[in-house]
Amino acid sequence: MKGWKHLLGRYSWLLEIWSPRTCAVADLDASAPSDVTSPARAASSSGEPVAALGAVHTAAILGQQRRARAALADALGPSLPVQDRTQLLGRDTEIDCLFSAIFDLREHALIYGGRGAGKTSLARGFGDYADERGAIVIYFSCDDSHASFAEIFTPYLAFIPANCFSNMSRGNVGGAIASLGNDFGARGLAAFLANIDEQRVILIIDEFDRVTDGAVRNEIATFAKLLSDFRSSVHLLFVGIARDAHDLIHGHASLRRHLVAVGLRPFDRASANALLDEGERRTGLRYDADARAMLIGLAAGSPYHLRLFAFTAGAAAIAAARDAITPGLLMEALPVALENWAFLNPTAAALFRGKAEEGPAQRRRLEAIATTALVDGTLTVEALGRRLGGGPVAEAEAAAALERLADALVPNDDEQGFRFEDALAPQFLLLSCCFAEQSISVSGRNAA
Ligand SMILES: Nc1ncnc2c1ncn2[C@@H]1O[C@H](COP(=O)(O)OP(=O)(O)O)[C@@H](O)[C@H]1O
Ligand SMILES: [Mg+2]
Image 1: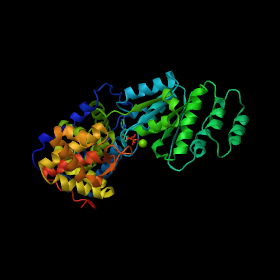
Image 2 (image 1 turned 60 degrees about the horizontal axis):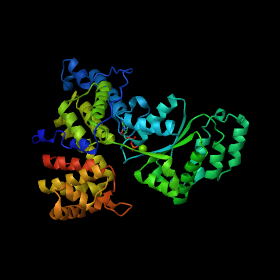
Image 3 (image 1 turned 90 degrees about the horizontal axis):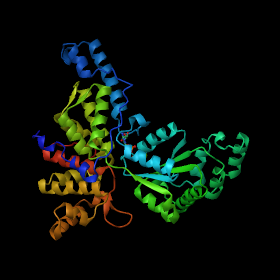
């Protein structure tokens, strides 16, 4: 492998571009210390090389490895949103905004951001805090993009405790719900919920962007507006993408006064380090300073990618009975993460690899494309041109570079510029450039 020093924190300057860091790191839950001994320590404490151990020792080490892997998945597994506020890192500002919107201003809110940015995690963490403050918090996700208004809201009704309706008996509440029927609309539901007096109820509607039917979206906008008009203590917390705010407001212009949109900022360096600290605490592994700088740089503000890369490297360390995660180990381990992504995105992955291998000038353009997508959230010739130096020559270079990557891009809904078809792609493009520079080949099950 070539020298990797120049790769340290390569893209971490992206964190500064997005926004200044204002969040404090949430306290880590110190109440659940782990006694997991790292597999490497288990092997070395026996004083014998792994290969020389007997069957009993080998079984013990395999057991240790299994436990270490489970602890690693628990601490850094990338697929599960955080379950409660103790695991939620670096979102103090967003939590404050949500509290102010819902508890102080009595408005509705929308959490928006890209895939893997931590929207569901923030919603769950906020829900946990709100629950602590006495609110009833009900979470559902819009899995069926063709669901009607009534189908979306029916599941919530079963979870609103009858004692929230101070002027209705339990039986009356059940009767009122039944009399709404199977196809109720915004007015019927808002009128029913107006019977909730004091109790703060928060309905979290995750994956709201999957609701594509314009009529259903308009009905939901009307519902939000009616709740506000009735000065209801029921609040909606939408979780989706930025365009959802426009759609809701389009459905009801006056909703503009009753909806607070909270965009997710990139996961900052302190939060990333806190996450890795937690991984270390639970597994006995150690992410050394250089490996951390590299991981944080490559993840470029995405908690999903940070977890994925840190998890992949941790799993490789456990398999190799090693304690320390170093840049060298990262370069050995991370091709697996890229291969797994490539399996699901073969066209983009092959394109990234092919272009990245064309040489340093091409890599500079690819990195500029990834950066522009991450920082600006959209790819336009003008924005990319500015990043490539500005002026007509750079714009022509930008147009050609976007053209070459066209198979991995789709036009934005507003027809202004492009975005990656897979929102998780920019970090894999950075990784592809990194590997090409290091002449590390990614075999790929399907990535050819
Ligand atoms: N604030 C956070 N602190 C710690 N881990 C986080 C945080 N936000 C997200 N994650 C982790 O990042 C990954 C993606 O988060 P998720 O909430 O599912 O994103 P989204 O809903 O935006 O797709 C998950 O593994 C989650 O545990
Ligand atoms: Mg989510």
